[in-house]
Image 1 (cartoon, rainbow, N blue to C red):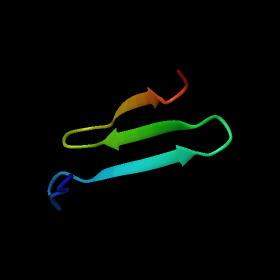
Image 2 (image 1 turned 180 degrees about the vertical axis):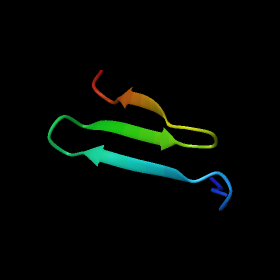
Image 3 (image 1 turned 60 degrees about the vertical axis):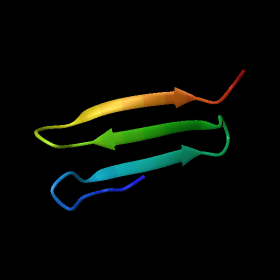
Length: 38
């Protein structure tokens, strides 16, 4: 995954709950939550 300087993204991984949070902020902040629990 390529992250351009003009479109920064932050990725957080929670080891206890195994959830992945991806914050992409092109114009503002949008939060996407990806649960790896099946």
